[in-house]
Image (cartoon, rainbow, N blue to C red; front, side, top):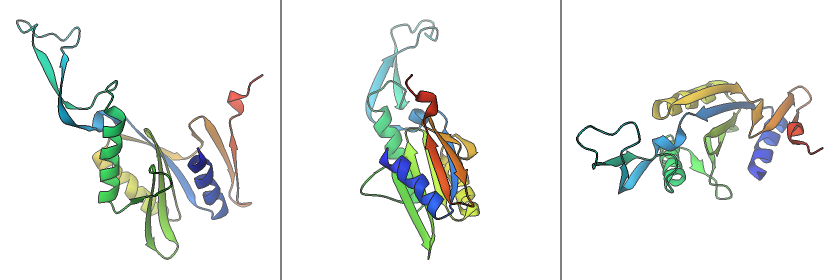
Length: 168
């Protein structure tokens, strides 16, 4: 949560672009490292092969390995693009281009916050990620993880609000 508060504050202070992406069916992107089998799903049992099982080639929702395998795949794609994960939060990836030009990407399960100076570089990253994963481009960030972001770029201010979750 500290990264989710810190990165938008950097965006406010340095007048950075703040974009958001969502990965569709994130856990289905993970590759399995071991042999796993499952019963045929109800309604999809092959006639005459009722006692057969299915060998999984990809991760599925509900598997213990699903979270880790998704992260490993995402980490590989980011490193392949030249991004480094931070030591303080392994879900924060940074790439420095030159001088004060950089991109910070914050991953939270299947939600991404992308922050940087150069909108065209951010768009290029989005295109590259879309080659590896089914993505939904949510544009400028208005809300992430139930936290609403309101921004006044001129005043270099950004407000985070969880008003909807207020206990009455």
